[in-house]
Length: 193
Ligand SMILES: Cc1cc2nc3c(=O)[nH]c(=O)nc-3n(C[C@H](O)[C@H](O)[C@H](O)COP(=O)(O)OP(=O)(O)OC[C@H]3O[C@@H](n4cnc5c(N)ncnc54)[C@H](O)[C@@H]3O)c2cc1C
Image (tube, protein in one colour):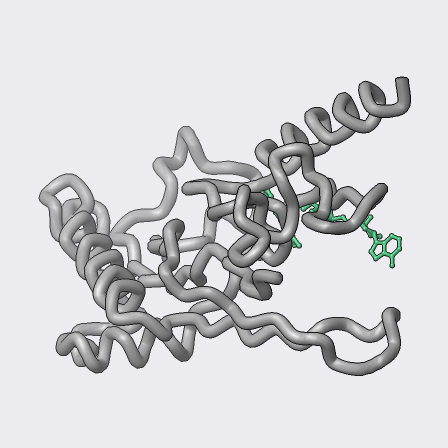
């Protein structure tokens, strides 16, 4: 069985100090009017890293062992650095420079790829899109369920949730999970006659 999980990789914030507050006419009547910093983040939506999953004990109630393995491939590392640099470039455009003062985090001292990666590692987190630990596929050697969501080689057992994604979507996964649920429900109804 395939025991690997994927998750959208982490975002890391670059904070920018703004030159102006809200224009007086547009100012909201709350503490928002005092906020003078905004944050821009990049997200690695197609991570190459896969997370090995394992059984943690003999007890079915115990959570499995999952090592997220974030930033473990050269491609993931290269692309989070590129994403961070792209945000900086966008912030340097004339339109944004006219309303901002300076980058507050990570700040100009973080310049090299190694420093940028280190900042990303220390300031990033999962965006909770785990999927793929029971991937769908035709080959029992590389997948867990078939195209009817039935577990290979076991009668009367289906998996119907985000774990059957053969790969991760390039965006939030809830809508795709609901589509799996709709399809699973119709397959179950069909089989029940
Ligand atoms: C904090 C957070 C924010 C998110 N934000 C977004 C978002 O903005 N947009 C988006 O598209 N996606 C978002 N997601 C992702 C999305 O919500 C999930 O990927 C999706 O809900 C997965 O659906 P699922 O059915 O696979 O699992 P779940 O929704 O986790 O459902 C699993 C169900 O199984 C039940 N269960 C667990 N163990 C057992 C057991 N032993 N016996 C019986 N039942 C059991 C649980 O109680 C639960 O109801 C977010 C996820 C998190 C955690």
